[in-house]
Length: 324
Ligand SMILES: [Fe+2]
Image (cartoon, rainbow, N blue to C red; front, side):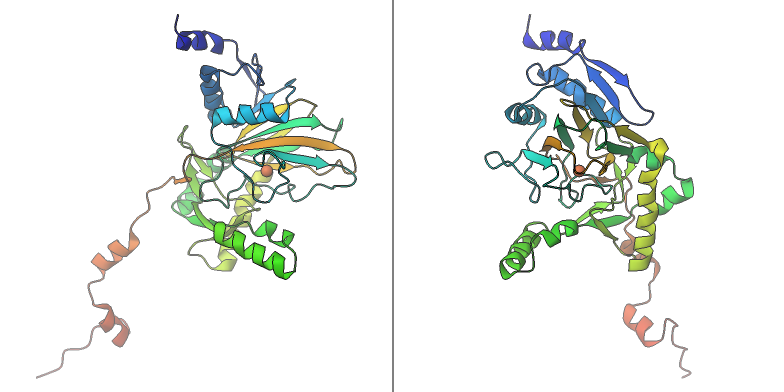
């Protein structure tokens, strides 16, 4: 019997139970630190695309095991601003307690959308968490899009927005070294332009791809218009019907689809201890615009036949014929 056939039989062990309406499933029947073969990995990727958030309980895991689990799903990214492990920079350690309060994750966001190709998924594992407090709330940006009226969906089609790492800029400090370092990062991570409505690469469903942590402006809009529209879209993440609120217990592991969900880490546990470890799987491609954009310049150039110099000279009106 070949390896592939064995893998197919093994996938029947995985059990998936839906735990919320628009996103979130609990997965059992797999040991993530040792028993994830290729067929199971593919099955999990499909479930991730379908349900957005996969929850695994009772999965003890060292940092090395988390790194090797992450590598099964793809190339691991190194977060430029997070508290990375010294030896293995793709491993992020969140060690929040009374001496180290949590920082800047109580904002709705998808991870690292300031990148041209944002991560496709994030894996977060609970090492030592409080009995209550420190939940993570996830929201489905597919459901948020589908809840909009046809008119609003139509209005948003084809828009693009700039994403920037602006939230991290004050970590560099007001010193000459800090300013130089910031300039270096600005060169390495210039603002990225992403579609406001993207297509999920697997499900092909449309989703809203702007978030209040990294999106700074909608292209081609006045600042006030842009901010008002963005705020309106950000408000959708707060609608409870689109959310799944996850309560952590030690050794719970969650994988979320960074393309179709946003999350918010609830900061209600300080000064209690909340130790987590995370790896981030790099994306395969930049978010794809869900709509084919009209080439407006092309259309306008064909429609307006008057040479532009004449329009400028005569305020848009053709000159009267001079009597001979
Ligand atoms: Fe995050």
